[in-house]
Length: 218
View (tube, rainbow, N blue to C red):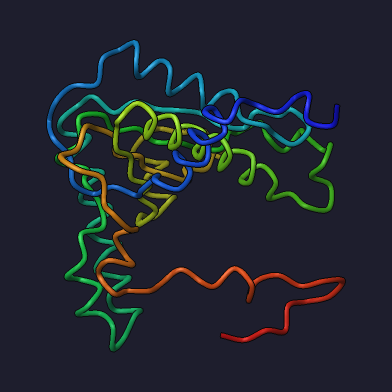
């Protein structure tokens, strides 16, 4: 039968539900994440697909309070620079909560490994497939966290060179994410930037083309 490998209706519903209810969280409780749950999240991330099976992701757990404060400062500096770059929307942007670094119970940095240049399979003409692969790992972790009732936020407001230096990364490694994780009082009903009026989800029909670039405008 064509659907012999299909999951049960309940399993399919759970998969679609976790994708629909995943949120970029910025508000956290201080409750610790059990080590076994954290291990499951990391294993889910490590199960992600990667181009040429390069597995370019590296994870750094931040446990030092001083280091956490330094990362928060790096993010704050970039938040202010971003506000300046946004011009007339700067005030609106500064009112947004963009991270939960000081509040979350688990803080992790994800980076691209320093030896990824040796991988040519799938990257010869598209070298940024290392980033695409690591992004799949982060998405896996995100979905697993939501299924576990754990919130996660991806912070990208930082100077990658400054963060790499602070964490003593090899010269060609590249940090791509600061991940805030922890239990939450509630998951946002909608993406926070949609709830705040910053932007809204595009109509899917406007993003699909057939044999050529989509021409439908909103």
